[in-house]
Image (spheres, each protein chain N blue to C red):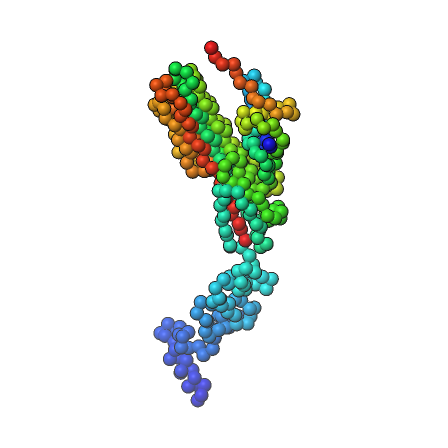
Length: 285
Length: 67
């Protein structure tokens, strides 16, 4: 009698195609061995982890800064700091300073640009016109990657004018100054670009800055400035007489050369100042 | 004074002689990466107007002025 009743109750959960309604026809959780989870409820937001033939277990993570990390026993929730990775800090220097090596750092990326060279000046020293001056060269550029083990400790940072340097690990020289123009009408040459120095303690790519251009006496245009390869800033030249050179823009750009200094306007037209360099340190934890 | 020598930057004078660039002149040296190096220099040494050639610092000779 009881068995017949039970079968009739089960039949009430079966549709006309003979399929059992899982939401009302089962009275226990489907075990793992039958393709289930073995669980009746799962916490909102939790992850389910395998546990052999036992019911799956939950991995919950509501604590900020906790991440899922692999371990010898499988995935587990761990504080981010304990497994490392992820943190990133960038510092840039445009004047001399000291970079302190954090104890937990894993590696750094260093980007350096040397200062740009100054544009040449144009000085009238006789009753005839001068030539046009040359542009300053761009500073050298460098990108380097250094493992923490290759970084000895505090690093002296030299940044801004001239050669920019990250201690003895990496340096970039400044662009050369453009040549001054002279009387009578002799154009100045452009300054050469600076360069980055490779280092054996890291992976380094160095790029030479572009040279400044010589003055173009035929068109009375002064020499354009060279630029750094990483900060490809604007290039200028000065047309017409008595024009001072333009200062370099951005980082590592040369100044343009001064224009022709006319006999009617004695004195000196200065070249444009080269722009300073920069040292950028990106820290990876 | 100290002159910063840059062996990677060769300077060729108008006679065809090749030397190393004097990239910077400073009262005090600061730390730089190899192969850059500092040497003592005369007070009248000027960056990019002198070069390191034949184990000595010398002004880069200029071509004679045109008549």
